[in-house]
Length: 95
Image 1 (cartoon, rainbow, N blue to C red):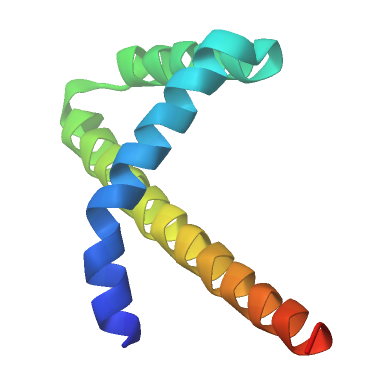
Image 2: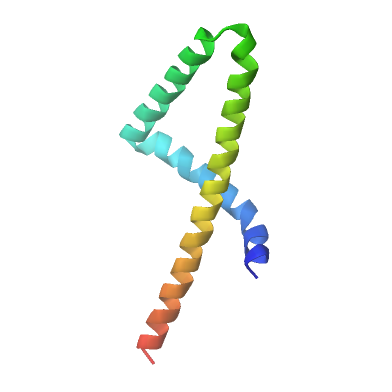
């Protein structure tokens, strides 16, 4: 069931996270500032590296994005499972 839940939820997770990040950029000042600073620092690092390391920094960034995607999905699914467990426990206490 877990694999089925994860495969069914994956498109929903992507959509929800995209909306969340968009909302954070619009409405959360600290997130917006930190996001800008992170992008600027990474840009500076990328520009400072010699040509022979450009591919390495690309691979690093790609791996980081892949890791973040796995973490986001796992956290979202775990939160969903926790909510189901809490709901079940609440139902049991009211019967």
